[in-house]
Length: 371
Image (cartoon, rainbow, N blue to C red; front, side, top):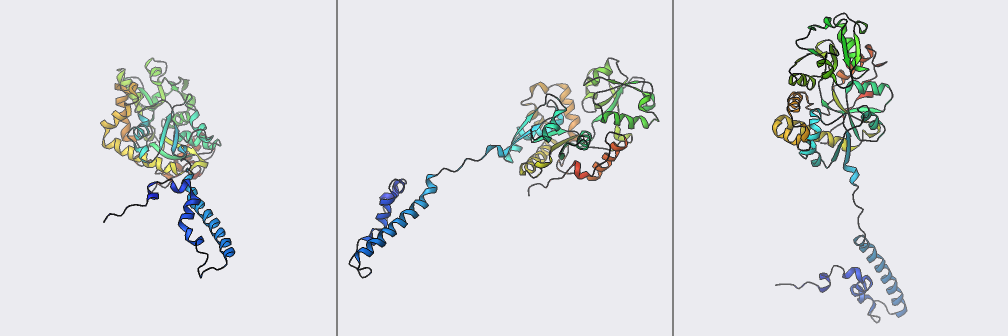
């Protein structure tokens, strides 16, 4: 048997338009029987009736009020993250770009914006000043910055092995580190590169005074190809070596970790210390790990995603750099090797890049990932 719905139930605004009339309709029986045994005093009945009606009206409005009030819209900025890169987009940033393009950040309810700096020295400073949420930096620079007083900590790793090398021409006169004596060596960044070179020269019983340092800016390969210098310190094994090959003047690299320099993380993500409890960072690192595994499992598809919005990188050089970078990506971006960081801090202190090796907790942290 069909039961006809109440007419007032068909109009969802009926209770909102006339709440007092509806309350009177529901409870009218309480005010319509003055001669019953319940209440013989008409005045008393009216007084109670008015009180009941007033109470019911108040309750009715209280119940109905939330329906008439719109909820505050969610704050979109709570899920937005800005990441300042250490320079123009390149395959070193593979995990960041692929995580964005393939939706790994979106799956963690994050909208991540990748920004490029006008000055490559700015990103850590901007992160320390809370101008950006995260910055891409290098572990050696992280130690220097923290010792200088910047309130930064490493929260994740992008490239987990050193990339920097001392590079010479493969067919040139320098065959061993000892052959660097009295030679010109180009550099682009002071501080760590000099500490690195100092350690390499020590392997051949040489000192910085035994060579001539030449500031060549960022054009490391060109300085070597042109003959302006005999070697360059700070050349990336995944980039400059490929540049030299494509110029048909192959380079040869001396790898620091094979010459007495403790291994370190080349590319790291840093955040201001007061941001470490931000739950977005944990979700960010989860997405980064998923993107890295996707890249390793599907390198060709990942490459297509990488160049989708960076068509200018779709050339032979960057395809080679991509190939050589993938094996060096951090499989567990959030993981922290405290012994490694401690060892490298002591190395920098010994070489004079920093004045003292601080506890690892000053430099880096391992954030717990969401379960």
